[in-house]
Image 1 (cartoon, rainbow, N blue to C red):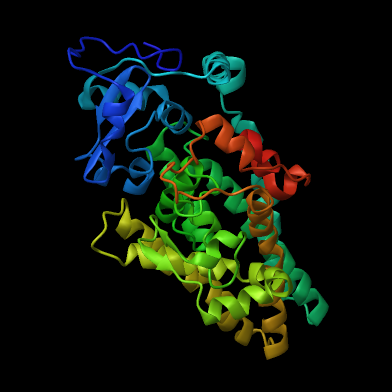
Image 2 (spheres, rainbow, N blue to C red):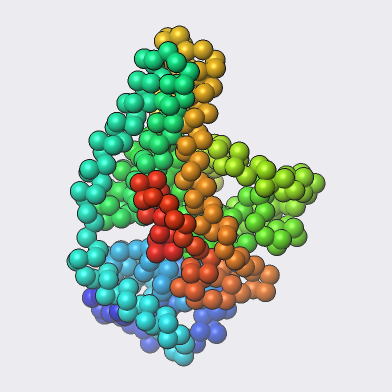
Length: 395
C-alpha cells in the first residue's frame, strides 16, 4: 500500500476517465480538481477544511499535484484521506523523465528506515543548550549591573528564540514525532509560547510558499510591499491569492523601495513583529477556519505576558534603566533577525515568475524544477539555522 511509487488504493470504483485537459478546466477555488499519480481528486468541498490552509490546494487546482502531496504528507494520511475524494483516473498525462527519476528516488528514501526515522537524540541533546541560553539571558539582564552585560543577555535571548523557532519549524512540518497531534503541541510550545509565532499561521503561510515558491502572485514569502520588492514585476502592483488583496506599488512603496538596500537589514531586525501581527490577524479573523485557534491565542497571550513582564516588570524591580531595557530588547531582536535574513536570501537571490500568462504557481514548471530554480543554499553553520542551511534539499 505504498503511495510514493504509485497509487495503490484498494477497492476503487474509477470507471470515469479524464484527460489532463479536462482536469485543467477545474482550476478554481469553487471547482478544484487535482491529479495524484493516475487518479483525479475533487477537493472542492474539502479544501476549506485543509489543516494547511485552502490556498495551498487552490494553487494546485487543475494540475498534477502528486509531488506536492507526497512532499507534505506521510503515507498514512494519504492512504486515509485521499480515497474519499477520487472521482476517476487520468489518461495521457505526460511525466518528464527527470520527474520519474525524482519520484523513484523519493520512494526509495522514504521507505528506507536508515533515512526516514527521526533521530530524537538530535533534539534531546539540544535541550540543555536551549535552557542555558534562556537562563543566561535572564541572569545577565537581572543579576548584573553593566549595560554591556544586559546587551549580552539580549543576544542570548535572541539565540534562544532562534533555536526554538528552528525546532518549531521541524514540528510544524510534522517531522519530529511523525504524528501531527503531537507535533502540534511541540510547535505550540516552541513557536507560540516561547516566540509568539502562531504555528497555524506559519503552516498556512509556509505550505503555500512550498507549493508556489517565488511566484509573485502566490508566494507570501516574497510579498513584502511596501518595504521590499525583489523583482520589477511588483512595479505593476499584484494581487496576492494568499492575502486576498492587492499589493499596490504606490507612492509610499516607491519611496521605500528606492532605499530598500539601506533599510533591508534594519527591517529584518524587527521582522519578528511583522510575524506577530500576521499571526494575530489570522487568529482574530473569525470568518476563517483556524485549527486550534483558542490554544494559539492563549499561547500568544502567555508569550507577550512573560516577555514584557521580564523586560518591564522584573526589569523595573531589579532597577534596570531605560537604556538597559532598550539594549536588552534591541540585542534580542537583532540576533533573532539572523533566521529571517537566512530564509529571505534563500529565495530573494533566485529567479521569480509571474502568473500573468496563467501558467500557475510554478510558472509552468514541474514541482522539482520550480523548487530548484526558486531556491538557493547559503553556507551558514548548522547550529545557526539548522535544516535551512541546506534549503534546496529542505524544499
